[in-house]
Image (cartoon, rainbow, N blue to C red; front, side, top):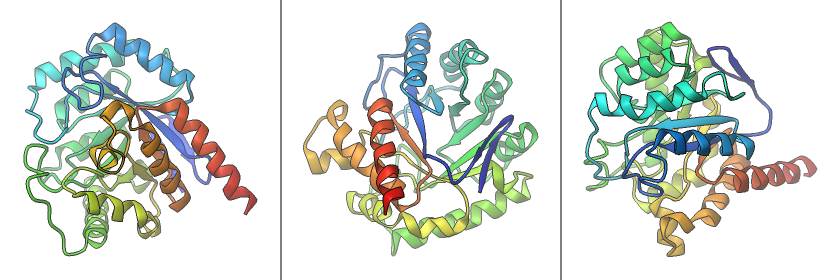
Length: 278
């Protein structure tokens, strides 16, 4: 199995990839405002690379529950200076975390290689066609509703079956838009239209998605369902996030999206050493 993102190629099996989060926003739930200044965001990104990140995920719009949408021009103003300063300076691929095709196109033109799309439940195929043209990587995430509505009352008859069916249907639609399977990774969207029980079930049953033969992305880092179990505030939920990351990789996930890169890299390497000894 391979994941291709423009000139980058990741071939599995291999050690799990850690995707470091760089929020260039004033209102993200865990670190809003800390890296809104481009210089601070670039410095943070370089630190995450030094800590072992294999991918950097740059986002300019908070997608926490209830977050207000950001205008396209503002999102571009936030992310493009950071991407431009990092492109060619770092030795790992840049992902842009956006649901807007125009932002994705500008980011790809500026040096990004991956589009991380929380709105893969979209109807229009413009995002997918630009991904196909650019030969970019694409992370298709499951979400019920929108960031403004997703946590109002999420319901599923069977959350694992629903997410798996979504992945199957999205892979077909992506192929129809010209996106090759090797360009696609899949994210079950923990916290995006899910209750605490839904999130735990999806984590427990990650293995149900491995037969789709695409890299699985898990982003549990600092999310509220971890706080539900631990009682910790967002920036103190790293231990719960590490537990989720290690469990997910043992169950078949291949990419872990996290704020806490150094700790996650160390925990995953130990998890993989234990797996190799079994």
